[in-house]
Length: 78
Image 1 (cartoon, rainbow, N blue to C red):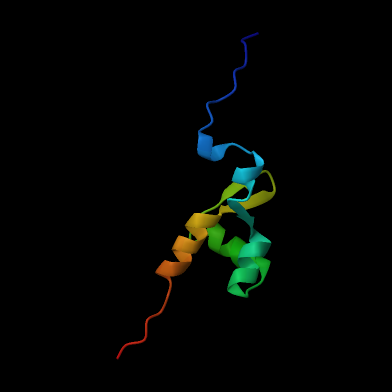
Image 2 (image 1 turned 90 degrees about the vertical axis):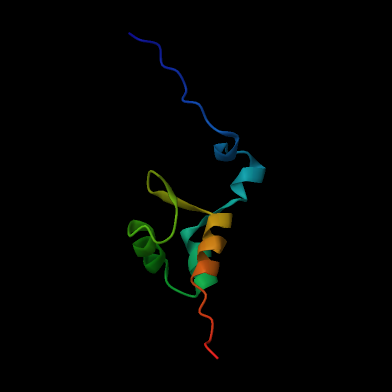
């Protein structure tokens, strides 16, 4: 039987406590946007909000979420 090796993991993908704070849940994103959690899941499925899926768990990179949010800002026209 061939030996299994762990895949290389970049330092940004490790799961120590400082990196865990860089990921938010769909519930946290929903609260920020004042929408329901299923709406966040629809946005993730459509590729509108960047996210990682681990089994049934979804995590959203905090920085990417807030960058996306900035790009959706509506600026009033004079």
